[in-house]
Length: 335
Length: 139
Ligand SMILES: [Cu+2]
Image 1 (cartoon, chains in turn red, orange):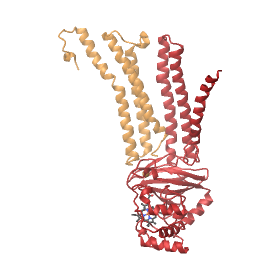
Image 2 (cartoon, rainbow over the protein chains, first blue to last red):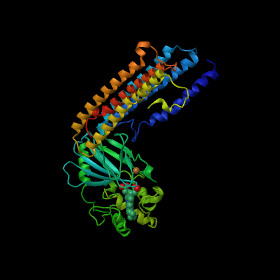
Image 3 (cartoon, rainbow over the protein chains, first blue to last red):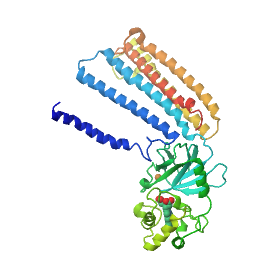
Image 4 (cartoon, chains in turn green, purple):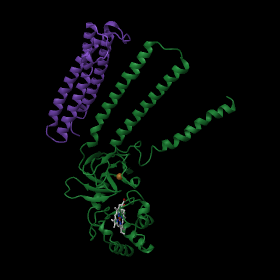
């Protein structure tokens, strides 16, 4: 092969490799439906791969046929061939393929409402965060949390979904399909994660200015670890505070944060924003917006609206650096 | 439905007139199969919502009634399809097309169209019935 030709042939190859590598890497990660970590997502991933392979085969066959009839066998075809092509390829084949996909699709459709093993989690979509209640089997009152979902591995958990103002959609791609959340109507989702790990969930229905910042982390834990965690989540906030944290608690009271936030065991019982009783035990801040460093806490408190447009929490940019740090120390310590 | 609406001055021959009136009937007939499909569709959705949303009828009853209705709908469509196949006469003549524009060719064409519509209606009824068997509840 002449050099120039070889190079010309190598170029598209290099190009397609360069294009597909990042695409393949995109299949992995904490928020990929193609890297399933649970029973429900596995079913959907299989469905996807089967449909993708089928689509590729059909695409190649159609284009191959087109190529064959326009470049290789250009003469007129007999009417019989044309008729078989139309009836076989245009009616029978689509009917069989669509029927098979319909049967398969319908047979897995009820799965998202399978009964769970006991634990129920109630999630309400808010502007732009997630209100979360854990109802273990037999519980008479919930363990309240926010912006984070924890699930026991190997067990089926029922999620009851609701919304406060507008339609949101609850989706943890690595664990299962998405389910819309409607104001005034409950929807259900049942998930059985199998692999412990941290996955990402994202609101999947446009819900306003900060829709893209409405995310959360889903932690799948070994069942014993989950039980311990849930037991620790219940009950009042911790009271053993460092000096900085004690000053921070004072600022929290002084600034009136408790009008919107609850910290169990204190006088703060607001319900407009997320429950902060154990905010320090979460792995993100502001529904997946930030990490949980001291800087992140300070940034959240003083630049809330810059970080999350139209957020329903005022920015406390009048606080001094020292005050913001004390407040951050206090909240971060609420584990 | 008669040929008086035809504004042509040329007086029709009796035979032609007759053939046209007969065709008016097969024009109606091609709508029968899709109508059965439409009724089946409405009954399925209506009864299931009465059961699952309003909880007026037990779902098992709805399932049994709708399964029977689906079989009935399919039987009617099969009968309509069989009749239109005979009207098309394709099995006798081997002719798929009707280029002549004679009353006979019009007659066969309407049979052809009615037959294809019966096939599509049968597929519609089957697809709409499938959730009855595969989902089998109010999930
Ligand atoms: Cu949302």
